[in-house]
Length: 390
Image (cartoon, rainbow, N blue to C red):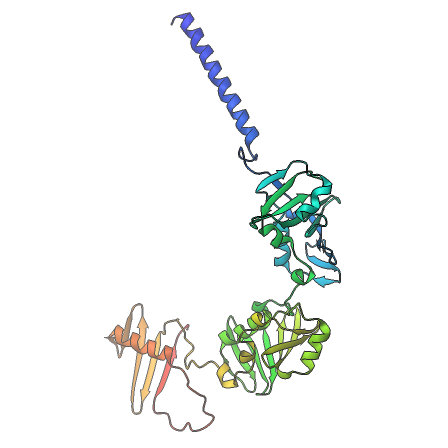
């Protein structure tokens, strides 16, 4: 090969390699950087680093939250209260990546902050990070078109506009952030449920997954779906945070009893006494007395007031969706026995019509009580025995 051409080829290859190296280097620089012309972020924090939050709406009293060593948030001011995990998560997620719409001013004079509702701010949110560093977000008035709000990060001279959701996310007080559920338990861990009410005391025990039985007023199969739905309704009860303890206690005292519910879990027993005055519900638990949020108790008083028979399992047979392997039928002097082997049914050693047997199985599975008779059962007209699940 011509030495001159070889040298030229080597030179071109070196130039191409250098160009690729430079291109890759420039791309690496751009990684994690905003796209050209993109509006800058106002603040970006890691939720795990946030240890304390202070929210102040205008000149109102501040609300302070602190995270303990286990990562659980509690309200510490204006009073000590449990915090709503979901509500706090919405608050912290608002500052993990707060984007601006545009920069209004790169160096807004302090004396002009009042023109934007930032002196004092409509909302002042201070986030204390691990190590003690504080980051304060100031949210001001709406912009002239009303589709954005003015925002400033304390220590940053820039003035931004951001979507109105920034204000709604940070404009919270202790009433918004407190835990509103009046009892705390895991519904799937409830092993016993008791109700004391005007229609008579009832008590249920869980004997298997979704399978419940009456202990009071007598042993009987219970409707597991209804019992677990009742436990769920009690779990979902929330207070009305706008009604103070004194007013709630007065309302409870003047209301008529509906029921007292006790739920047993491995963590202990939760007791809820529910009363009703007109269309308002009140409840008393170990933490206090509350007026209840209407949206959280839809259908609760009806569920608590159901007749005992309405809570019983009305299915005559319990084989559910497990196909039987044997069915015995006695009709007066006549009797028949059907056995299943594989996909076939036999009777008296002969193959039997599978469709007909399946029709019988479906009818037996759907057989339900309309009411429960305490007496009147004499000689049986028909006897059916079903074997399933061995």
